Length: 37
Image (tube, rainbow, N blue to C red):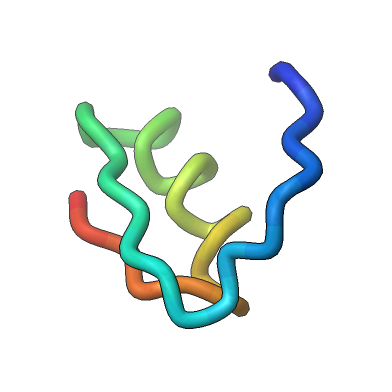
């Protein structure tokens, strides 16, 4: 994964895909951003 240095607080993050990989990616942003899968 590429390290991201961005404050996602209050932002919407779009995760394309599903399954275990999509869930893992969504969980990384779930604490600070609204996640759409």
